[in-house]
Image (cartoon, rainbow, N blue to C red; front, side, top):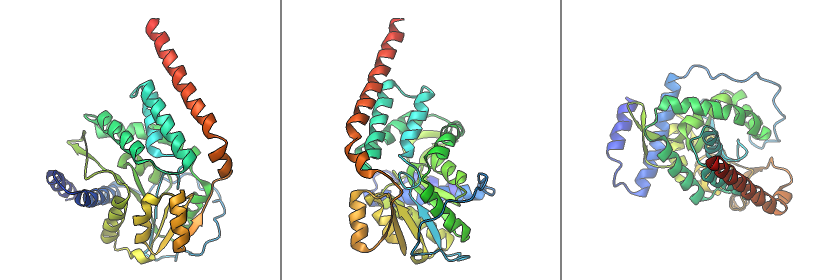
Length: 321
């Protein structure tokens, strides 16, 4: 049934307005999340060590409240850095990308880590590159590659403070969802490794198990995340006024506004201003923020340029050889 609904939406998405495409992306993400739940067994949680001490909370999840859930953004909220760029670098190591591509990804990742905010142009560039790459690829092949790439990334790049917040809601017996612009294939891996209920991610169109190189609706970003959360809440019988959401980016204000308990985590400047103006709770797990923003940009830029130059020199040497 879900597959038939998705196919029907894809047939009619051409010529839609931006608002309609946003709603379509949200519904597609909710469909994919529901399909994952149907297929899934109990998530394989890593060996449960003693969880890190959670920060002092003004809102404590109510144990056993089946109408409450928690929604977590991924990039810079749960994961240090951006998932799509880790995917790009992982694919480069498997010879899917050129030296020029990886230098561009490295610069974009450095920009994101230094300024703590997403650049729409970088996101669009990564999306276009990824879609061109996977066109014609089988879904099973990409899923296997994503598993290999994100196993070490997840182990090394999770913010312990946010992980504690995830566990706080898990221990209360609530549904806990990842909501991200990253591909659904990546999102479900991260969610599964963290023992989450499931994931809402960007859905790439497929036909007979092969990627077409197009998205269903568009990128799950900004208002599309709110649309996906709303669609999922209707499916799961959730009361959004009893739900919590966590994000670092002002782009996610629509999703944060949708719930009764919005939190900002490692916020960018625009989201921090909005949070203070609206009395939202702020959690910041970063350290040395001023040093990172003032003292490191030149060093990072030089490092990226040096790495790109070294790659280019190595490539030329191989060609001459």
